[in-house]
Length: 246
Image 1 (cartoon, rainbow, N blue to C red):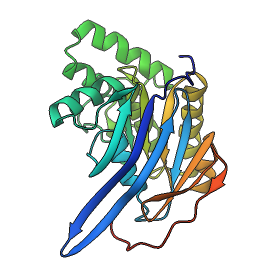
Image 2 (image 1 turned 135 degrees about the horizontal axis):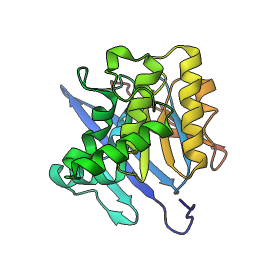
Image 3 (image 1 turned 90 degrees about the vertical axis):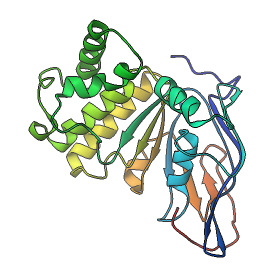
Image 4 (image 1 turned 120 degrees about the vertical axis):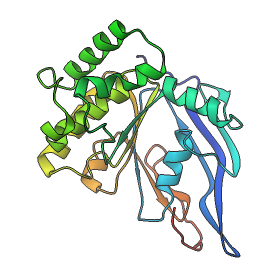
Protein backbone atom coordinates (compact mmCIF):
# COMPACT_ATOMS: atom_id res chain seq x y z
CA UNK A 1 0.00 0.00 0.00
CA UNK A 2 1.56 3.35 -1.02
CA UNK A 3 1.48 6.45 1.13
CA UNK A 4 -0.80 9.19 -0.19
CA UNK A 5 -0.37 12.78 0.92
CA UNK A 6 -2.65 14.33 -1.69
CA UNK A 7 -5.91 13.36 -0.03
CA UNK A 8 -6.30 12.46 3.64
CA UNK A 9 -7.47 8.94 4.39
CA UNK A 10 -9.43 10.14 7.42
CA UNK A 11 -10.31 13.67 8.45
CA UNK A 12 -12.22 15.02 11.44
CA UNK A 13 -13.23 18.67 11.15
CA UNK A 14 -14.17 20.58 14.30
CA UNK A 15 -15.79 17.47 15.83
CA UNK A 16 -17.53 17.68 19.20
CA UNK A 17 -19.37 15.12 21.30
CA UNK A 18 -21.58 16.30 24.14
CA UNK A 19 -23.43 14.35 26.84
CA UNK A 20 -26.12 15.62 29.17
CA UNK A 21 -25.74 14.53 32.79
CA UNK A 22 -28.67 16.03 34.67
CA UNK A 23 -28.52 19.73 33.94
CA UNK A 24 -24.79 19.62 33.12
CA UNK A 25 -23.40 19.32 29.60
CA UNK A 26 -20.17 17.32 29.40
CA UNK A 27 -17.95 17.90 26.37
CA UNK A 28 -16.23 14.58 25.73
CA UNK A 29 -14.75 16.06 22.54
CA UNK A 30 -14.51 19.79 22.03
CA UNK A 31 -13.86 21.02 18.49
CA UNK A 32 -11.32 18.37 17.50
CA UNK A 33 -9.74 18.46 14.04
CA UNK A 34 -7.38 15.70 12.88
CA UNK A 35 -6.02 14.67 9.49
CA UNK A 36 -4.75 11.10 9.01
CA UNK A 37 -2.77 10.14 5.93
CA UNK A 38 -2.55 6.64 4.48
CA UNK A 39 0.25 4.66 6.11
CA UNK A 40 0.47 6.57 9.38
CA UNK A 41 0.94 4.91 12.76
CA UNK A 42 -0.60 7.15 15.42
CA UNK A 43 -0.69 6.72 19.20
CA UNK A 44 -3.54 8.52 20.98
CA UNK A 45 -2.88 9.30 24.63
CA UNK A 46 -4.36 11.16 27.57
CA UNK A 47 -5.50 10.70 31.18
CA UNK A 48 -8.75 8.97 32.09
CA UNK A 49 -11.65 11.14 30.94
CA UNK A 50 -9.53 13.04 28.42
CA UNK A 51 -11.63 12.15 25.38
CA UNK A 52 -9.30 9.66 23.71
CA UNK A 53 -11.81 6.78 23.84
CA UNK A 54 -14.60 9.01 22.54
CA UNK A 55 -12.32 10.07 19.70
CA UNK A 56 -11.69 6.42 18.79
CA UNK A 57 -15.41 5.60 18.82
CA UNK A 58 -16.29 8.53 16.58
CA UNK A 59 -13.32 8.20 14.22
CA UNK A 60 -14.08 4.48 13.76
CA UNK A 61 -17.80 5.11 13.10
CA UNK A 62 -18.93 3.34 16.29
CA UNK A 63 -20.52 6.60 17.47
CA UNK A 64 -21.69 9.84 15.89
CA UNK A 65 -20.55 13.38 16.70
CA UNK A 66 -22.79 16.08 18.13
CA UNK A 67 -21.21 18.59 15.76
CA UNK A 68 -18.55 18.69 13.07
CA UNK A 69 -17.82 16.47 10.08
CA UNK A 70 -16.01 13.19 9.35
CA UNK A 71 -14.51 12.34 5.96
CA UNK A 72 -13.19 8.95 4.88
CA UNK A 73 -11.25 8.86 1.61
CA UNK A 74 -12.63 12.31 0.86
CA UNK A 75 -16.26 11.30 1.34
CA UNK A 76 -18.43 12.92 4.00
CA UNK A 77 -19.72 10.03 6.17
CA UNK A 78 -20.99 12.16 9.06
CA UNK A 79 -24.69 11.64 8.40
CA UNK A 80 -24.53 7.90 7.68
CA UNK A 81 -27.21 5.88 9.49
CA UNK A 82 -26.35 2.83 11.60
CA UNK A 83 -26.73 0.35 8.72
CA UNK A 84 -24.49 2.46 6.46
CA UNK A 85 -21.91 2.85 9.22
CA UNK A 86 -21.91 -0.90 9.89
CA UNK A 87 -21.27 -1.62 6.21
CA UNK A 88 -18.51 0.96 6.14
CA UNK A 89 -16.86 -0.49 9.26
CA UNK A 90 -16.92 -4.02 7.85
CA UNK A 91 -15.34 -2.87 4.60
CA UNK A 92 -12.88 -0.18 5.67
CA UNK A 93 -12.06 -0.63 9.38
CA UNK A 94 -10.39 -3.30 11.49
CA UNK A 95 -10.68 -3.37 15.28
CA UNK A 96 -8.32 -4.69 17.94
CA UNK A 97 -9.60 -4.46 21.53
CA UNK A 98 -8.03 -4.83 24.96
CA UNK A 99 -10.42 -7.69 25.80
CA UNK A 100 -9.72 -9.56 22.52
CA UNK A 101 -13.49 -10.12 21.94
CA UNK A 102 -13.07 -13.64 20.57
CA UNK A 103 -15.83 -16.27 20.53
CA UNK A 104 -14.75 -18.59 23.39
CA UNK A 105 -15.84 -21.95 21.95
CA UNK A 106 -14.72 -21.22 18.40
CA UNK A 107 -11.37 -22.04 16.82
CA UNK A 108 -8.85 -19.36 15.95
CA UNK A 109 -9.57 -20.00 12.27
CA UNK A 110 -13.32 -19.52 12.67
CA UNK A 111 -12.83 -16.40 14.80
CA UNK A 112 -10.76 -14.85 12.03
CA UNK A 113 -13.35 -15.83 9.41
CA UNK A 114 -16.17 -14.01 11.16
CA UNK A 115 -16.08 -10.67 9.26
CA UNK A 116 -16.11 -12.61 5.98
CA UNK A 117 -19.34 -14.34 6.98
CA UNK A 118 -21.05 -10.95 7.17
CA UNK A 119 -19.44 -9.99 3.86
CA UNK A 120 -20.98 -13.10 2.24
CA UNK A 121 -17.66 -14.51 1.08
CA UNK A 122 -17.68 -18.19 0.02
CA UNK A 123 -16.63 -20.77 2.59
CA UNK A 124 -13.57 -21.73 0.55
CA UNK A 125 -12.37 -18.14 0.29
CA UNK A 126 -13.10 -17.60 3.99
CA UNK A 127 -10.80 -20.48 4.95
CA UNK A 128 -8.03 -19.53 2.54
CA UNK A 129 -7.95 -15.90 3.62
CA UNK A 130 -8.21 -16.71 7.35
CA UNK A 131 -5.33 -19.20 7.11
CA UNK A 132 -3.20 -16.57 5.37
CA UNK A 133 -3.92 -14.00 8.07
CA UNK A 134 -3.04 -16.44 10.86
CA UNK A 135 0.22 -17.22 9.08
CA UNK A 136 1.01 -13.49 8.92
CA UNK A 137 0.58 -13.11 12.70
CA UNK A 138 2.63 -16.24 13.42
CA UNK A 139 -0.15 -18.66 14.37
CA UNK A 140 -0.06 -21.14 11.50
CA UNK A 141 0.22 -23.98 14.05
CA UNK A 142 -2.65 -22.76 16.26
CA UNK A 143 -5.53 -22.51 13.79
CA UNK A 144 -7.67 -25.19 15.44
CA UNK A 145 -7.14 -23.97 19.00
CA UNK A 146 -9.90 -22.20 20.92
CA UNK A 147 -9.12 -19.01 22.89
CA UNK A 148 -8.88 -21.03 26.14
CA UNK A 149 -6.03 -23.00 24.55
CA UNK A 150 -4.09 -19.86 23.66
CA UNK A 151 -2.04 -17.43 25.72
CA UNK A 152 -3.13 -13.80 26.00
CA UNK A 153 -0.58 -12.74 23.42
CA UNK A 154 -1.75 -15.45 21.02
CA UNK A 155 -5.37 -14.42 21.50
CA UNK A 156 -4.47 -10.83 20.61
CA UNK A 157 -2.71 -12.12 17.48
CA UNK A 158 -5.93 -13.88 16.50
CA UNK A 159 -7.76 -10.59 17.03
CA UNK A 160 -5.23 -8.79 14.82
CA UNK A 161 -5.63 -11.44 12.12
CA UNK A 162 -9.40 -10.91 12.29
CA UNK A 163 -8.89 -7.16 11.98
CA UNK A 164 -6.80 -7.69 8.85
CA UNK A 165 -9.12 -10.15 7.11
CA UNK A 166 -11.00 -7.62 4.98
CA UNK A 167 -7.83 -5.66 4.14
CA UNK A 168 -9.17 -2.55 5.92
CA UNK A 169 -8.06 1.00 5.22
CA UNK A 170 -7.50 1.66 8.93
CA UNK A 171 -6.88 -0.49 12.00
CA UNK A 172 -8.08 0.95 15.32
CA UNK A 173 -6.38 -0.62 18.33
CA UNK A 174 -7.86 0.21 21.74
CA UNK A 175 -5.29 -0.50 24.49
CA UNK A 176 -4.06 -3.60 22.58
CA UNK A 177 -1.45 -4.45 25.23
CA UNK A 178 -3.62 -3.65 28.26
CA UNK A 179 -4.29 -7.29 29.22
CA UNK A 180 -0.85 -8.65 28.38
CA UNK A 181 2.39 -9.20 30.25
CA UNK A 182 5.35 -7.04 29.26
CA UNK A 183 6.92 -9.48 26.79
CA UNK A 184 3.63 -10.31 25.07
CA UNK A 185 2.80 -6.62 24.90
CA UNK A 186 6.11 -5.82 23.22
CA UNK A 187 5.55 -8.70 20.78
CA UNK A 188 2.14 -7.27 19.82
CA UNK A 189 3.61 -3.80 19.30
CA UNK A 190 6.36 -5.30 17.14
CA UNK A 191 3.67 -6.97 15.04
CA UNK A 192 1.78 -3.68 14.66
CA UNK A 193 5.03 -2.00 13.63
CA UNK A 194 5.58 -4.70 10.98
CA UNK A 195 2.07 -4.09 9.64
CA UNK A 196 2.79 -0.35 9.57
CA UNK A 197 6.03 -0.91 7.65
CA UNK A 198 3.98 -2.90 5.14
CA UNK A 199 1.69 0.10 4.60
CA UNK A 200 -1.12 -0.34 7.11
CA UNK A 201 -2.66 2.73 8.72
CA UNK A 202 -2.95 2.23 12.49
CA UNK A 203 -4.54 4.41 15.16
CA UNK A 204 -3.80 3.09 18.64
CA UNK A 205 -5.17 4.31 21.97
CA UNK A 206 -2.81 3.65 24.87
CA UNK A 207 -2.02 5.04 28.32
CA UNK A 208 1.51 3.62 28.29
CA UNK A 209 4.26 6.06 27.33
CA UNK A 210 6.72 3.39 26.16
CA UNK A 211 4.06 1.76 23.97
CA UNK A 212 3.16 5.13 22.42
CA UNK A 213 6.78 5.68 21.40
CA UNK A 214 6.43 2.79 18.94
CA UNK A 215 4.16 4.99 16.80
CA UNK A 216 5.57 7.60 14.43
CA UNK A 217 3.06 10.21 15.61
CA UNK A 218 1.63 10.85 19.09
CA UNK A 219 -1.53 12.83 19.83
CA UNK A 220 -2.42 13.77 23.40
CA UNK A 221 -5.89 14.69 24.66
CA UNK A 222 -6.86 16.65 27.77
CA UNK A 223 -10.44 17.64 28.60
CA UNK A 224 -11.73 16.75 25.13
CA UNK A 225 -9.12 18.80 23.27
CA UNK A 226 -5.87 17.98 21.51
CA UNK A 227 -3.06 19.54 23.53
CA UNK A 228 -0.13 18.00 21.64
CA UNK A 229 0.43 16.48 18.22
CA UNK A 230 3.96 15.49 17.20
CA UNK A 231 3.01 15.85 13.53
CA UNK A 232 3.10 19.61 14.00
CA UNK A 233 5.34 19.47 17.09
CA UNK A 234 3.24 22.01 18.91
CA UNK A 235 1.58 22.09 22.31
CA UNK A 236 -1.82 23.74 22.59
CA UNK A 237 -2.96 25.32 25.83
CA UNK A 238 -6.51 24.28 26.63
CA UNK A 239 -8.78 26.01 29.08
CA UNK A 240 -9.98 23.90 31.97
CA UNK A 241 -13.36 22.31 31.37
CA UNK A 242 -15.60 20.23 33.58
CA UNK A 243 -14.45 16.67 33.64
CA UNK A 244 -16.73 13.70 33.13
CA UNK A 245 -16.58 10.18 31.87
CA UNK A 246 -15.44 10.11 28.27
